[in-house]
Image (cartoon, rainbow, N blue to C red; front, top):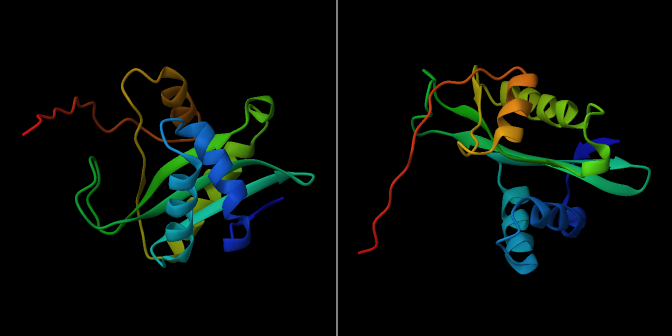
Length: 144
């Protein structure tokens, strides 16, 4: 079953998010998911297999320039995760489709995402889900 995540499901979503972003703490994930669930310009979908939460998608509206797009706002896939034993079964596609439909209802005509250059698994998944590569960039930073 796939549904929009509610505040009551924030702990399940945060635990899934921690698997995707292991450099964070569970407390940080809970705080972030609470914020995202409560905002009108973002949404989280959660998918269950029986009573087990097995995946989630997080998307939001971006009003700044999004690489390769020509409109604003743009629906943006910020995060997508499906537990390993449930991959290649269509759950990611359902989660992304839910995000795309939400973005359409919010007035978006384009939907975007990103992944790190070295993340070949994510690149392959994005291409399989119908995304086309818009550009490749390397980002720089400097401590001040």
